Length: 483
Image 1 (cartoon, rainbow, N blue to C red):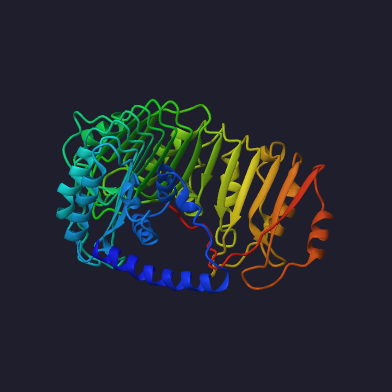
Image 2 (image 1 turned 45 degrees about the vertical axis):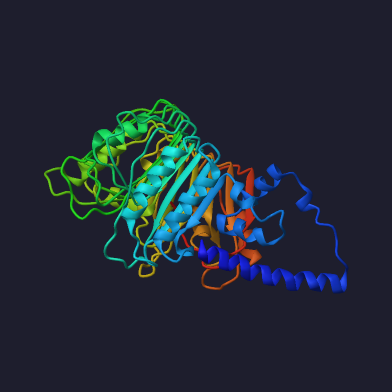
């Protein structure tokens, strides 16, 4: 509060200078914004953080107390002199608001400024949830430096919230077993590095949300959940991410029973002995970008991978990263990959100069593929193999209809060779999409290369050849993960 007030006073002095400049130059105009109704002004302030809203109190006497009426509280503990001052400010703000006014709460606890007294926030957050049962959005985030050795999760006890629509928690330790928890309006739930007390608690938290549509879970290094059950009749999107555990717990498993599920994403470290999907929607998109961690029990890598992939034999739309494809291929050196007979749309990241044989092997496991999207990455210490020696699987010669290159093409890039490869081998290719920009090596693309590509030999009557210009962006990274 002290820091917020100091900043507002500093801005007040700046505003005085600005006002005098206006009077000297153009004269004083009418303050039309201040004439707006109070509810509308509060609505405008709700798009600002609480710190920014406090700054407006210096504009005029009309604005002095408006920020206190905004039904949204967004705070960062680093804006206060210490954690206790931050907690006191929250309590005072809630006292001003009353028990049914606040609709949105967001708190970021910075553990690197005051060394984060996590336990100090537990009673405060408990009061927030208990007094404000009409919340629509509730978010708590803990911020740490990347090189920090010790992480202490903030304790939190959830209670009944009749109006809560969005719940986002980061590095929080949830208490109790949620026996009587009810979240009847909750549609979005993000649990990142959240420590759940038990298997039953995790299942109860999900089942207490009867209209849940979007669920993202990043399992914590310290969680005690062994069997994760995601049972929801309304769930449409589920993202599961696991950071690398300090040790492997024998028997970890995942069960998904979500008949309306339309999107499933698996990210980072795969450390599950068993993965089973009981139900999902008829048309579901699957995105897999995982590293399979070696197990210490008797199960082989092939058994673990086959157990996962068997759930997706009928999936029509799938995306896979290069690291996942490479690991799957290495575990099936003496056996063919499982078949995805239902797959018609496939997006993959490939590194052809490191493992060119991977492309035909993967494509052979998709006998009915029609639409292929490729992003190529370059492995710096490998030599490119000639694509002319790589054959397109016979099943795709008469089924593949469109190929799209997501990575940009240059005169020296691999995408042009790959485009010629598909044009030469596919008899049913109807659409080819390329992207052009300046290469990462700084060599610009020459128009003559495209002309040569159009004149290249082809087995199909290609009717749609599309070239999309791409503007390079600074610090552009290939295949970066976003949570």
